[in-house]
Image (tube, rainbow, N blue to C red):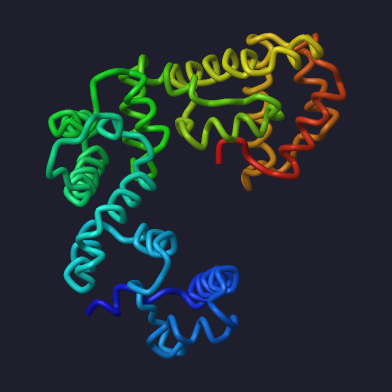
Length: 299
């Protein structure tokens, strides 16, 4: 049963083997091919790896792809792994990068394995009902009810459903404000910064008050992170706001299969400069090229 949990795709298995072999070679573990054959106890063609013999960082990488149920089963098969607090600590912090409890003085007998199960349970609860999920985290002492702490938890967590997250942020604008300030857009090109922003705070599917709020907050944050660019190009939060909407509309125009007559670069420059007079033609042209080559800013 245990070996079935650790079956990996051939490409990923080969990558892990190469990383392990490099580490063995650097640490003086002998020849590259000899090191691999002694570490992997099961023949390579079967696709199984003995995790107990892997370096801890590679073991954490593999285990991070499992849910809480599979991890508990793994703890039954590999008991040393199941009781390794450093391993469970690594799994907690690699999946939930920030929790208020990490900065507290932990009581005697504290278990990161129990914390992992609580974090997993809370995330599942959040993905069904955001308010209940946050209440669960607070009841377990994992989070404190402060906008900055909640924003950091959201920013560094990988397992929250983006639709539920959007509902929560729409209700907790104080958390949204703190979440925006965690982004650093220094020296980023505007479309790339907007993509990074929407990667953490997903854009709504329809235009409305929430989207306008997101773009407004992004515009102010982008200008605050790039004072030199704002000065040199004559930008302002209002100008960035207009450019962001232009980029979103252009993204839809160029990527949608329903739009037959795509907007040309000349049309985009003309339409954008009508609304943002102080922005140079060259800068607007570079915006068009970015969307044309890389794609949608809110995909």
